[in-house]
Length: 140
Image (cartoon, rainbow, N blue to C red; front, top):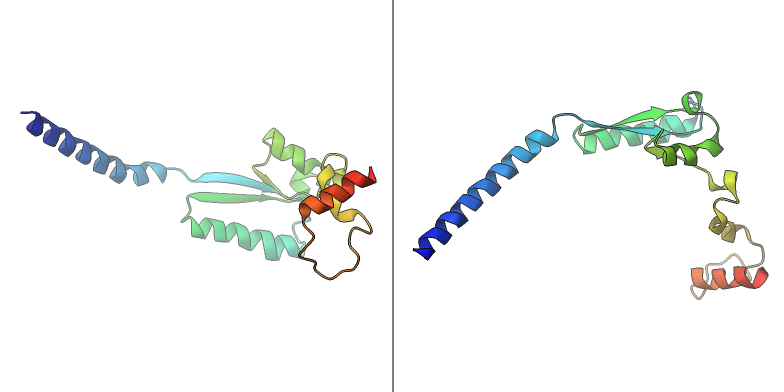
C-alpha cells in the first residue's frame, strides 16, 4: 500500500509541477517590465543615437518585449553628477555615470590617474591590480 501511495504522490507531484511550468510563462508575460535608463547627454548626441537607442531596442528584442527600456536624456534628468544619486534614490533604474564628476565619492577610480606607476606604456603582465594598490598606499 505504501508503494501505491508513493506512486500516486509522485504522479500528483509531477502533474502539479507540469501545470506550474505551463502556467509560469503565461503569468510572466502579463505586463512588461519598464526600466528607466537615464543619461546626461543631449538626445541628439551620437552616443545617445548610435549607442543607447540601439542597445535599448536590442534588449527589448532579445527579451521578446518582456522588458522595455525608456530612455531619459539630459533634458529630462539634468546634469551628469546627479545620475549616481538618481539610481540610488530610485528615480532611474539604470544610469550612465562618469566617476570623474565625483572624484571624492569614487576614490578607487583615481588609481588610473596616478603618474609614474609604470616604467613605460607597454603592457606588463607582471603588474596587477594588487601591485597598483600597493603603489597607491606607498604614495599616501
